[in-house]
Length: 145
Image 1 (cartoon, rainbow, N blue to C red):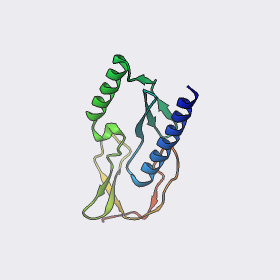
Image 2: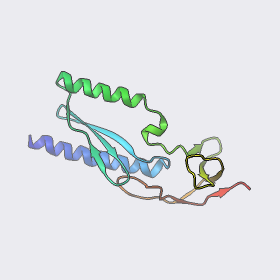
Image 3: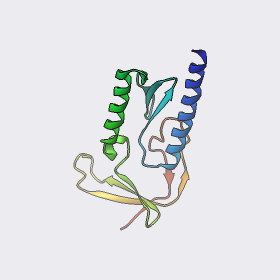
Image 4: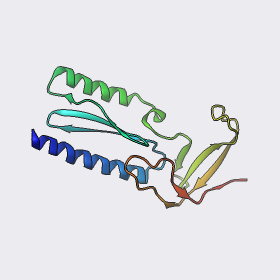
């Protein structure tokens, strides 16, 4: 039991490091999901802006736990980009090697009638946090007039 807890702590530390690295290179990521399979148990983690939330352990050796894990994978596979924590106002344009950010010009963010598009190619400073970049990237942005 003690070693399994140590393995879980080690796996969690590794998952946190991978998540931090994802936020460093994936600029449009609002939060991240991950899971750990350790000692026959699966835990799902949501890495948000301010905290990390964990599911209860799912014992995949039992029918109930295995079913819950498969249901989780199926539900995740059905999610759209906005549901899996991608910021849809920020997109990478691979052919031109730049990021495009759409910013509403009015206060009514629900309408998005007028949008100014900003572009950046170089990230000057990246946020090096565990949970999320929390929209704190600095870069040289410009927009077309």
